[in-house]
Image 1 (cartoon, rainbow, N blue to C red):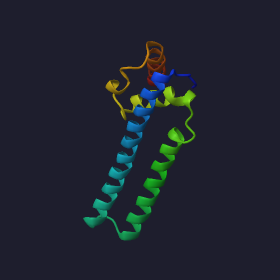
Image 2 (cartoon, helix red, strand yellow):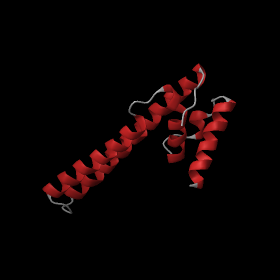
Image 3 (cartoon, rainbow, N blue to C red):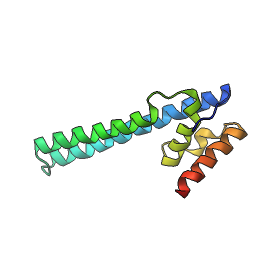
Image 4 (tube, rainbow, N blue to C red):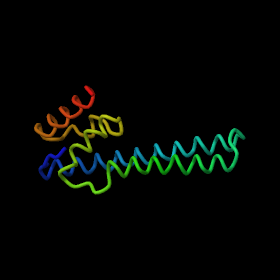
Length: 115
C-alpha cells in the first residue's frame, strides 16, 4: 500500500519506524535468550541449541527484512500502520500525524483486523 506523506508526517513516521525496529530487535534478542537459558539449564544439548538459535534468528531477520528493507517514503505509512497493529509502537507514537494520514492508517488497520 502506498501513500505519500508530507514532510512533517514523514518525520513522525521515521521516528515510529525506528522505534518499531528497536522493538523487533529486542524481540529477537529475547527469543535467543530463551534458547540460551534452555541450554544453560541443561534442557537442550549444545548442538540442538546452536541450530535452534541459528534458525530462530534467521527467521526473525527475514521477518524484519520483509517489512523494513528497501523501505521508501511511499511505504512509510503502511509500515507504521502494521507496526501499530503488531503492538511494536503505540497510539502515542503516531498522535501527531495529519488527519488524512491518521484516517488512512486506521483504515488499513481495520481492514487487517477484518481478515
